[in-house]
Image (cartoon, rainbow, N blue to C red; front, top):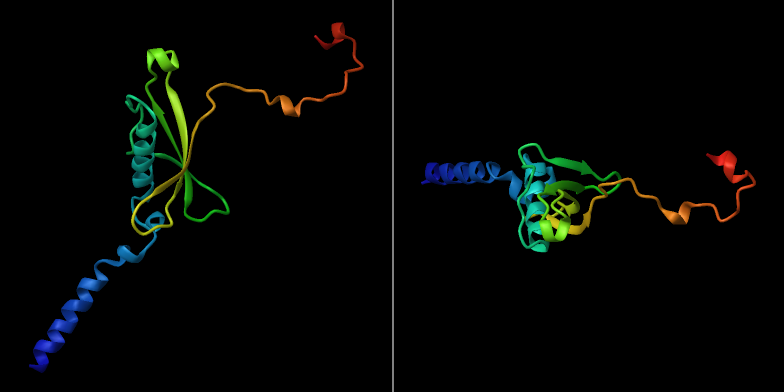
Length: 136
């Protein structure tokens, strides 16, 4: 009977040691970037009528956020729709939180800038003293 109890205890400890990831945050698990990419795709799909991804999650574009352990930015590109996006590809950046032990959670979904943009708030409000003809 003692041998049976020892055997059962040993078996129980082996089962517990073979599933360590259940208590580990999802961002620390193997393949976490692939899972973050897939979860980001799901969030993007909720925003669009049709979603055909031009990338896949076999080589995800994921950037960890410095100073925010467990959070990453996932970049995904979808085919554009002729009536909404002029047919051009659309890229999204999705901020994901992987600190949970269950699943990735989207914190924010944004369109990624696809063209050079100018932030007018950074422009000087004072007039230039250089004549216009010399600015060219």
